[in-house]
Length: 279
Image (cartoon, rainbow, N blue to C red; front, top):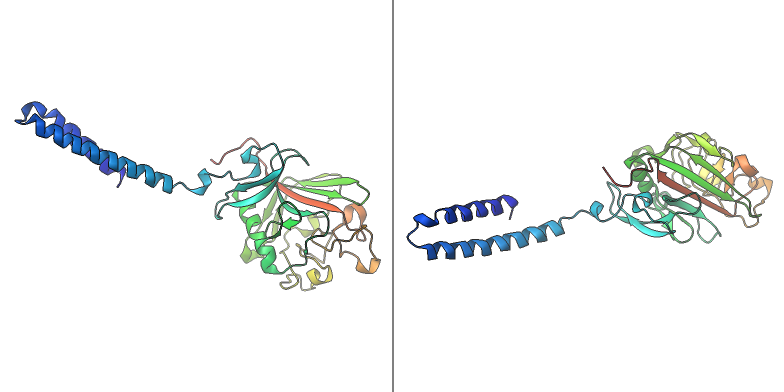
């Protein structure tokens, strides 16, 4: 029953009470009033139940790790327009609070040489190695402005980073292209700029015309073919044969083509950090 119905009941109720002095039977009026009040209570109970049932997921879950206002690393559920609520890994330690982890490599336990459909939906374990999924990336990065932070660690324990103040992934019809990449800061060098505007490729859905995903044993926004390949093969120890150049977890501007990193983590965060709630 609608709110209007409840209002009509109230109007009718008070109208009857106002005419009490003109009625020949006050008892009947008060009996009617009691019945109306009972009916109104039922309507209000139904309205409360309907309101509770109609609560949308966005009122229950924050839209990002930043909006969740957490201060510990962990797995939390977020809601992004266009998607059902889903769990994400939040990082508050690597580069400050509010980061949503979208990719992690750390021990080679997960196979990243995956099909298009697997990269589209995502795979792996949020507390280990994983890729969040291209469809989620598209919706997240188009919901509001996002920045990107890439953490790299070699097998000697040395760490470097690359940060971009804008990061946008296109939709499926545009093959989830890396459509925007903002200003670079960091000490790892800019190995992602080469890939701006390029569609995402996998071994079973090559967009380069050169089978770059197959040649580099990975999946990425390949150009001709890559300056970075963070979804490449995990090579224990870092160094690998030159004939396998680029096949590892490559970030050219730090250790070149012939080195695969021990740990990488890609993270995104809303750029307007003062906005903790959806407008």
